[in-house]
Picture 1 (cartoon, rainbow, N blue to C red):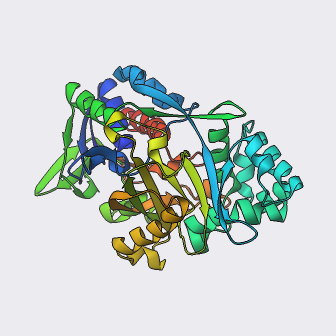
Picture 2: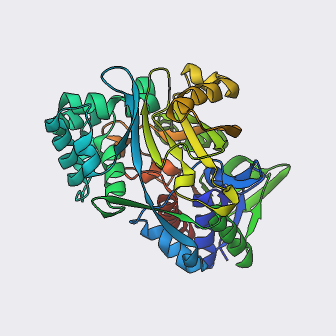
Length: 435
């Protein structure tokens, strides 16, 4: 029986191993962390089981739905009608909380002209019907927005979102990348007035735990606290892995850890492939997580454009997944994305928490903080300039029997568990079929 090692126990790695085992291939998963899940891993947050980074499900996520059916988890899927808001300074310099995310809110939004509002609405609606995003990959996103919505639309409604996520890397970006994000959310609406987002009852750990049990039930293994130190080709075919003090032989190996780690993991990679990996820029994320004694707002996503606040918005997760155990408290994520050479990347967690607090208290001065925490992920979001499809490395690394992918391969789609499941299936098919 063919044997494959899977490096990384995030959703992609677990989905890959599960698919391999279902196809009759022996699969063994190695994870450096003390728990499976990667960015979807859960932890104890002041007595609550919560994910380190926020996740949500969209109506078009068919790959994920198929996996949930396969695992018997379809009954855990829940849907919520969610809202969006916009918090920014008005023309008098006073911070205002505005409705956002539906046609009525758009028409009532006073900070841009009526013409710009209409152009914005038409643009967002047209993205719902995009089929082939390839032509947009040759277009710069800022030019694309100006063409559709004018300079005012880009400068007021979009520029800060890019600049507070990518900073000096914010231009040029591929229009295909942002178009796919707009399309995904647009197709997750039950009507023009209602957006519907999903979650799993009990959190994403329900899926992670079911995949881990499924892997072991099918005869695979999942080893935690087991970082892979090196991958090398074997002279007689296959690959060898160094894990701790062991050298383990497999017919193939699949890496699902962030691509920037792969050249050091496999130093014998062909230079052309390693160089292609190095051309993919990433930004990191320091994600601040807060528990308040009440909701901040009734929005799930709140765009925040405030001077001195280096995040594009806040995600009030308790307005998506409200449970009795939270007792009406507000659970708020503040994702600080940034390039690794930005001063915020080396800023202490306490300073980032204070930056977040300064904005959150302006949003709702009555909310009282109960608990706060910061998680950091070094390679959280690829930077996708125009023509990114030509830069994206293939799954085949050029080292015989060694394959690699991460959420960068979601492009042009947005990173999501749905995309990780899709990529995992493709990796399993490729590695499992290689002889």
